[in-house]
Image: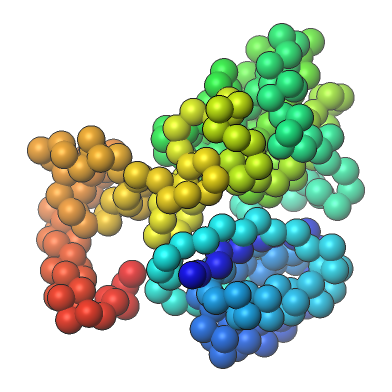
Length: 300
C-alpha cells in the first residue's frame, strides 16, 4: 500500500535554496516520489511512498524553520502515482502574483469540514471555487461560483471585475487542499471584505470526513498526480489525464472520436500544431513499448 501525503506550510525561509538538496536526497534514499516546491514563503507539494519513508520525510519537513505545526492530508493507492522525485525552487509555492499577499499576517476564518454544509447553505453566503477551470469542470460544491480562471494568478482580476456581485454577502472559499485559500482570503481581506471564510484542509479533507449521503460535493476532485481524480473517502476516481495538455478526461471523453491516447482530447484539439501531435505520438509509442517491457517510461 502506498501512502500519499499532500502538504503545504507557509514559513519565512531565509535561505530556501539551501533546503533543496538535503530534502531531495532524503526522499530519494527512502524511495519517496512526488513533487515539492520550496520558496521564501514556505513549502508545498505531494509525496508518495511506503509508511516508513513518508514518516521520515514528514519529520524532516516539520524540522524545517517554522514548520513544526505542519499539517497534511493522507490518502492511499495500490501503486505509486509518481514516476520520480522533484524538489523545485520557486518564487511562490502557489503562484498568485500579488507581492503584498501574506498568509502569515492574516487569513479568513477557518471552517471545519463538518461545519461546511451549514455555512454554504446559508442564503447570505456566496461560495467561490478558487481552482482552475479544468479542475472545476469535473466537480465542485453545489451552488459554487466558478470564476472560469485558467490559472490562480487570474483570480485578483476576476474579483475586481465581479466584486459588486457579492456586496452584502459573506464569502466562503475553497480549493483542493487549502493553500490557494490562504492567499485568496488574505487578498480579499486587504480589499476590504470583512467576512471571509475558507474550508480548512480543502476539498480533500471534506471528502475524507463527510459521508457521501450528507455531502454537497458533486462530481470528483482533480489531484495533481497519476490518480487524476478522487471521490468520497479519497478513493480513486474515474478520470484519466490527456497526454498532451494534462487536463482530466472522463470515460465519455475517451470515447469521443476526436480523442487520441497521449495525443489530444476535446479540450486541446485546437491547441497544438501537427508537428506537436507527431511528437506526442512518438512519446506515446515509447511509453507503450516501455509498458510492454514492464518498465515505466522516463517521461511519466
